[in-house]
Image (cartoon, rainbow over all chains, first blue to last red; front, side):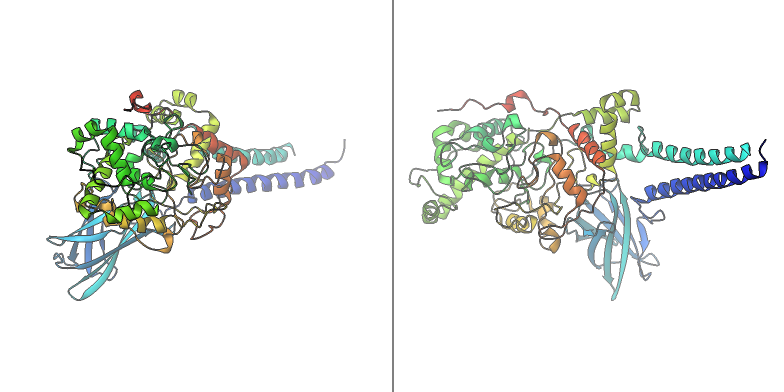
Length: 158
Length: 422
């Protein structure tokens, strides 16, 4: 019989290599899983609410689309409702419209505009068409009663 | 000691098991709810009813479609009597011609696009320089290298060959007796100066007739629609949760290609919806065609469509101004537009090479290699980013693209050259 000590010395490195390799494989698998999930990542905490307070808290703004959900590849309209922070409808506002896809670096495929004041703080936005699924933002800069403020809506289109 | 060895072996096995599970999950044969939503969006069963064309009051008139079909195939409507719409849009070749640069009476600078499914598009030609099927149909007829003819020639031909059909649809023909045989706002200087010498009332009457020809051809072209492919059968089975049938319809490589198409390869950014096109405009860095003048694509297309005498807002359009939303809310300028072109539908794409606006790529392999490497655009800015796909993955995407082939959903009577009067 051979002494056991030398044998244990020869096995210990194999044990450690095995544990290290196995551990690395697990870490690698978890890393790849996270990367895979992040490939098409849209921030998980993205606020896609259709009512938002403008950046400086001057206006409370909401929108409704003419379709049930905001469609892809279809020309449609929005009704934008603007009120003051305390809930009074804002009349005669001057509103400019912009938007883009933060992950793609391209703007809107159309040039939507506020075309009509519908009364009661409601404004018609025409000419909206989003040409692909994904994360879109719509920006409205609102000027009324001598004050200007901007509001951004996030959308996750499918 | 044995137990130490076992721990080592177990650790490696566990690591491998985690990787194998992760891989098999990502290469799944079942689709998540979100993926099924995307697949439903691409499915032909999700193609909406034919959209109205408010600019063409004859768009859904069956007699106009029959008349338009005759015009579509009649080569007499050209300067040499040999060119019809069907010369470059052949019914047995999916209404395109399968060659690099199309040939009418001369050679054009662009590849012919298919007519199939274009009733769903707000824009026509690779650069969107027309905004209706009827306005599109009128472009080639006056183009010096396509039909090469002019408006009074076509008016005389209608009076000589199709007077009964025309008057039944559109009322009396204008009096053409004193009008020159060859006149129109065209490149040919003789015809152009004849046109200038005509009264504006005569010009208007001839142009009305010309527009009615376009509206009839459009009524015919609206009927040319794509049909079901193997991909659609697969999606239908998957939507019914019938993966037994689904996995018999598409092979594993085709399904893997579909997964790449939806995900890593970013194809659905532009090729989305049941026609696999968003009908918008994109610069994908397609190389400039050799020996052709510089082509800035959409940058010029927007200016052309705004100036077009036949656009949706023109006196020849039947639409109310507020029905011309695409034109009213058009992005008319910007660096983004430089060298943008319209992504064509991918239905039957494997049957429709060569590819790109000037037929720059002969095969789908060349197309995919372009998207994979994402070279810089010859002008403007390419929207592509390198994909780093393997050769195997490229083969899988091509295998998937071939599943988009299928017969047209068109009644047989519309696929033949109709009898023509002498």
